[in-house]
Amino acid sequence: MFDEKAMQGKRVLITAGAAGLGWEMAQAFLRCGASVLVCDVDDAALQAVSGKHEQLYATRADVADEDSVTALFAEAQQRLGGLDVLVNNAGIAGPTGPVETLSKADWDRTLAVNITGQFLCTRLAVPLLKESRGVIVNLSSAAGHLGFAGRSAYSASKWAVVGFTKTLAIELGPFGIRVNAVLPGAVEGPRIRAVIEAKARSLGRPVEEIATAYEKQACLGRMVSPKDIANMVLFAASDAAASVSGQALVVDGHTQALI
Ligand SMILES: NC(=O)c1ccc[n+]([C@@H]2O[C@H](COP(=O)([O-])OP(=O)(O)OC[C@H]3O[C@@H](n4cnc5c(N)ncnc54)[C@H](O)[C@@H]3O)[C@@H](O)[C@H]2O)c1
Image 1 (cartoon, protein in one colour):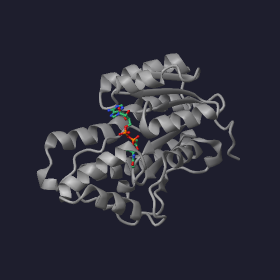
Image 2 (cartoon, helix red, strand yellow):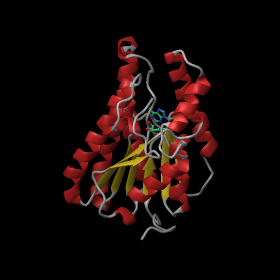
Image 3 (cartoon, protein in one colour):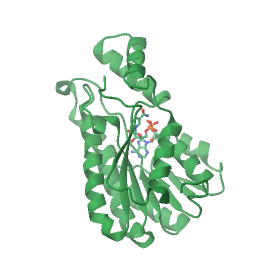
Image 4 (cartoon, protein in one colour):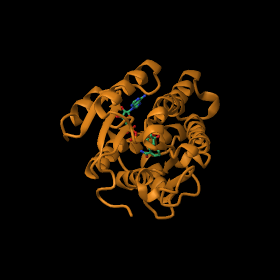
């Protein structure tokens, strides 16, 4: 059964965990008894969360940079003394616009953070997770199982996350390591506002029109909350999901098409 002590004594690394959904997840794991190391590229966000909890550690790392990830895992060893859960959360929105208008630099950076970053972290986590028979949770998106006009780099990177997840689940299952992807729909909060504004600009439409369309695209008629996503990540990482691996766990209020 899943309970409030489900993560007692667990050692958790959350990438991009100093703000946004990652910080929501960090707080959820801490509430359930885990020790949590978060990394981020935003120094102000790292500063803001530092000292908020005695079982929380915060450090600077860019998941797309190999040396930075190496240093991050050295710190994980030092701070946590091993690893039970890796949450590959870092992801950027990438460019918005028709594919023929996108620059290679923007395309490359989107894939570097959203999928290569997961590879770099996973590669170093696996030896630790083999010792603990641990868990990996990879953040994808509703755009990781649906097409998303104007967001080809993002969508391609998030479909890649699902392929990576399913493959890892096969490779690592024999070692008792479970691997799942969580696919959020539009999550209420500051990030989605920026995404909506970029979409409105790209389509030449009013921002409020796009905002309403975003709310209506889910059959539940509203965006999901950061807590909804943290709950699913926590569940996937817990023993309550002991037989769940290789899955694309969608949390999107049932969205059938992305605008
Ligand atoms: N918010 C949504 O509506 C939504 C929907 C679907 C999927 N997702 C996915 O959920 C994850 C978290 O999204 P979010 O909305 O919290 O993001 P966000 O834009 O709020 O960013 C969260 C944190 O990521 C950090 N970050 C950015 N690049 C980084 C890097 N290279 N290395 C380390 N940290 C980095 C930022 O500094 C920030 O503090 C992402 O993978 C995102 O694609 C989010």
